Image (tube, rainbow, N blue to C red; front, top):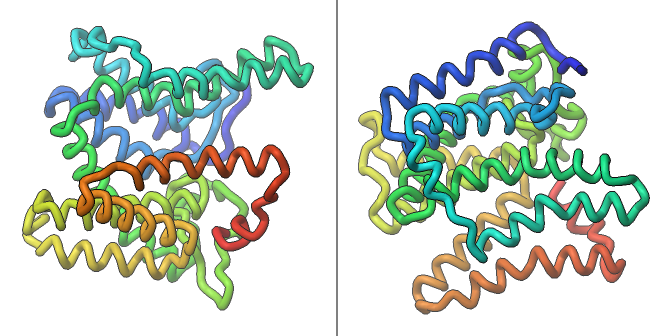
Length: 302
């Protein structure tokens, strides 16, 4: 059994989180409880991994197992509503693909099964939870709003690290979660990491908040006031924060996503969304076949 790096707050945070999830389930309806638990855990739990069965991706595993445990205790009937269908096949393939890769490369079945378990922890469990609780329009709106609120909560943390450099994870949990040099920006300054695995992840998280905030504002879903503050002011502050983070890859994806959704809504067709979904597959094909090595894109994103 391997221990995670960091100070005593690392295991305390992981051990306390299931209790928080139980409290949320007692106070709120399951959809709100799960959304808040996942967003809070993703934003503030330490990026530390224990070499323990079912906990190799410790942060994701703790979040998902805590949610599933509380759901089993307080909402058992809902868990039994899951029915596998054709839409789940891509996730099934994604979670099981490492087994065939390991076997094909001579690493053996044990390595393949371990890789499948790790992949399932990281992707399969969140997907399973979302399939049960966030599979209709009303629940997706709840999730979108809570993610947006989460990104607003992250604003002061991002500004602290923009000014003081990415230190919050080290100050709280005793270690840097990623190579500090990757937070340095050309021309000076820093890209915040806060409590996420990398600055790129934090940037994508904040960009997601901008995307959801803008779309909720345009569709009238965004409340006029949040904590007695005009929501448009908070949205503008979130946009400014994203610009100051200077992660061009995330900002580029934001612009593309907004254009695709806006044009799709105007033209009443999903063709642009389908093209956007096709792009990652094209990227994987060009990289694996050697047609394109992706170095120029990697340089731009980083």
